[in-house]
Length: 101
Image (tube, rainbow, N blue to C red; front, side):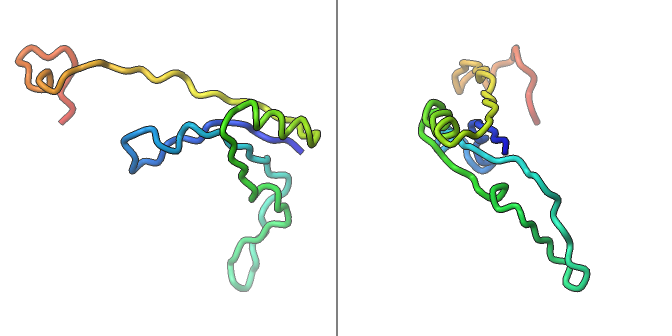
């Protein structure tokens, strides 16, 4: 059993950073999903791949994995690049960054 510890990406409909500061522990899939020939539904016998645990900090997620003897891999997000600008710079005649539309 192997788990991945990471910070989930923010929702596409989200402009802020709310709910993106938590950490998740997700188990890897060990078996493939089987398709029922009659209905076309997909079923899987591996229930751990459906489990998604959320933690406040990375240390909490690592402590959970160590306490239960789960092999894990931590993936961290790269730091965000911020371009400090004011609203008035959107209308500058000599823009430094290209106009997007």
